[in-house]
Length: 212
Image 1 (cartoon, rainbow, N blue to C red):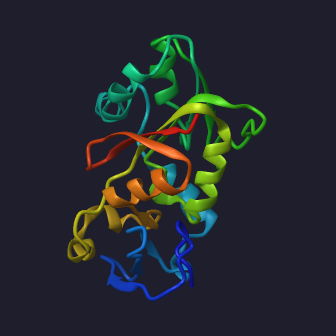
Image 2 (image 1 turned 60 degrees about the horizontal axis):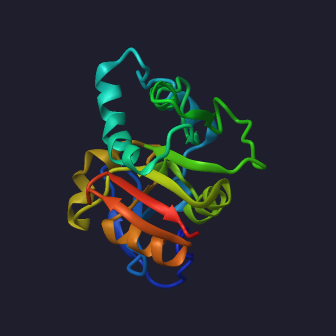
């Protein structure tokens, strides 16, 4: 078995999840990931996503997205072209950014599956989707290709703090959450995947910039 992010092939610390799943901890990049036999089926994922009550009419959800938007805005130029990667069934972040004067596209593997792979973007938002990636290395490679040199990638995913808290962690109870990142994981990504770390709150929001 190899780590789905750093591809380290070695011994992993086993962590009992809050449900029947078993998680593994990679000490090389600090990723925590579930064993492949526990990955959810596509129909299970899609059905679960449709239960989310997200949309521009939900003030709480808008406030939640603003935790990623607000630290990103000062780094953007007016009229830039962005992508909401993993937007879900009701794109909201793209509408908020269009109101700010940015051109936006949406992508979601289930609900907006036509990704413009020939397009390169000034910035990409990936809010609450990194924890769903079965193969984070592949997704990061794709995100890297979608960004212009110097382009920004804003990531929103709750970071684990201590491995001994994962068995009771609410974020790990979601059956579609299969990988979890530590603050050190994002330092590893910046160092090894062609990015520079621009911002982190060490809790949920990270902004990295593609090398120029």
